[in-house]
Image (cartoon, rainbow, N blue to C red; front, side):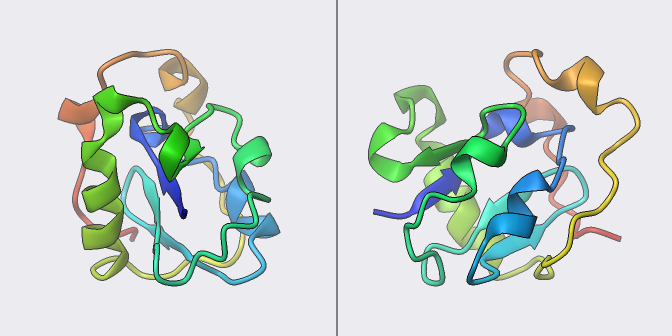
Length: 111
């Protein structure tokens, strides 16, 4: 099983998870991160680092976010890799508890 970044990451993108990843399998979009399932070694180091609880082992991913499995696959091949922590959006804490953020997903790569 691989790990998956799900909807809670949208508009938060704190990158705390990136610093603990031993294989650099994170990719950055404008307002979300994804994990490349081909590179993830299923170590789980990233999961507890996420302050918005956006990272799940695939088998533990809530059904309502099952589409994020494919989203991670798709955007890991389109977005640039990220290996160092960056500043989160200035308003990330306002978004951390917002539900149903899919409409705010931005498919643009990180700038």
